[in-house]
Image (cartoon, rainbow, N blue to C red; front, side, top):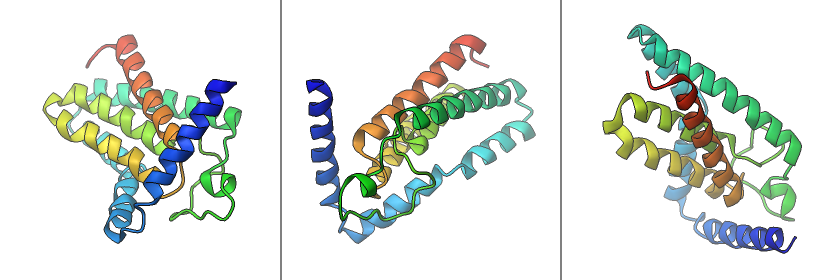
Length: 173
């Protein structure tokens, strides 16, 4: 119980530190843009490109991984039912309206790390772009006030874990 209290305390301190920087207009604008890159449109484009390039093994792998990740994500969200910052902190308002009620784990961050890990297997030279982008997605969700930091850490671990398990089960295409 003490561990959870300490973790929650750290989470609130980190969240507060991030939000004290939110007044910077450019940071908020960049956070909105980065967050939107993980809304799902780019994943559809990636799937379409794999289809056009006839890379069916990678397309199948990505679809299987996303089905597993989204399924586990929904199970975890409905199980933990952690309130988002606006519901948990009296008087706090987020910059954007979240797509659902609960915050743990971060779905944007989970999907970003899943995609980054799978695309890294296809194009290792893009790792220097993919993982910083996935980290930026998680950070943007905190800066926009829709997630606590531990929500994004859990999302990153979820996406990365599902990607690695999928690659272990199906192999690298």
